[in-house]
Length: 486
Ligand SMILES: [Zn+2]
Figure 1 (cartoon, rainbow, N blue to C red):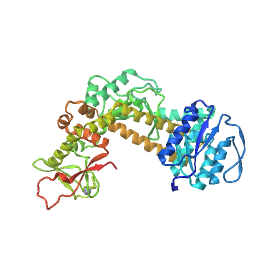
Figure 2: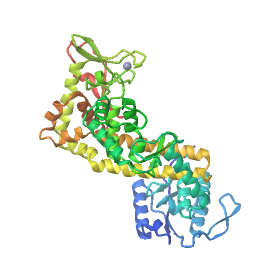
Figure 3: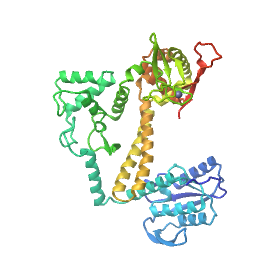
Figure 4: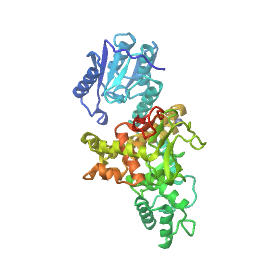
């Protein structure tokens, strides 16, 4: 269900006075000013102000509902007057400050949804937390209000027990052997082993292979939990486990901070994941030696062009039609020619102050931290959700849908963080001559840096168009055009 949005003629602005300290961060004057500013941005006329005095929350009384029936609701005369104005058509748009200014009781929200579905008026909020323009919006609004509602009550003994159950699922994952780095209780650090994991992580970040680190650990006399010797598999599993970053997984998905202490801080752990992922595929080594792998795309089918070997050690990038690649086989471009042109363009970008400033912003620690804050909020929400589902505050369908939406945001935030990680990109920027510093890089860091630079500009790489037979057989740089991020 999608509502058609037409600019309203008589919008309403809803602000709320509350005696709830947490919920009243912005005073009424500030709420009104922000709501009016939003109206102006949206091109809406200045509408009628509804000031709700919500200091008597949780006192209930029979009220008339939008569908004409009656029900027991918290006494909110201004909110009821607003709903009536909406259903009578006196108000044809709504700007609220924040979701919790609109509805604390989930039933109030349902009444608002009813009114909006009947009249199809546009609804906006200053903090962006309330939208009712699609089914997904409505689900998120329901979840948000349910969380606010839940958090305003004391947790019952039953909720606490459920929380403990969930935490236990996260801690022990069904029992089994002791986790390396932790005592048998699963939550106490075994510092001698934690040190080993920190050391191994640092070695990987310094570029050592997992096999090499295993050999060194064996030589130094460190033993894994169940075996005599370290294997790549064992160490790989340890280093990629979310548990050592103090994160809790539930059904294969990270659902938030765990009860146990972290061995690696979040930043280090993520950098290790990036470093290990870059080595994951068996063919990675050969392909990565040609730095445009993953940055060139076929103009016909959109697939990435892997590097292939032709003859005399001269490579090309070809839309490989083999089953592993699934390309169309119709586009190929000369490797060294494409690399020269791509490098020329990247170096040119790196000499532009506006571009380097933007890249600096994207790759800065602060940028990464901001993404992390968003992520922490999303993860907290996810945690609340699983608790609410366990407590039957929301249905399984709502839980599944909301989790899908939040998980998408989390995946997105993680992708942003991972893209921000490469230190090599930061080093290029700090160099006296970023262009020269970039040109001198090895294939893998060069590719990572180019990828970060391009994505900060909204590009994912270059689209390669077919060779024009009318032109000479010489390399034709105009076949490469910058490709927008999907
Ligand atoms: Zn193709």
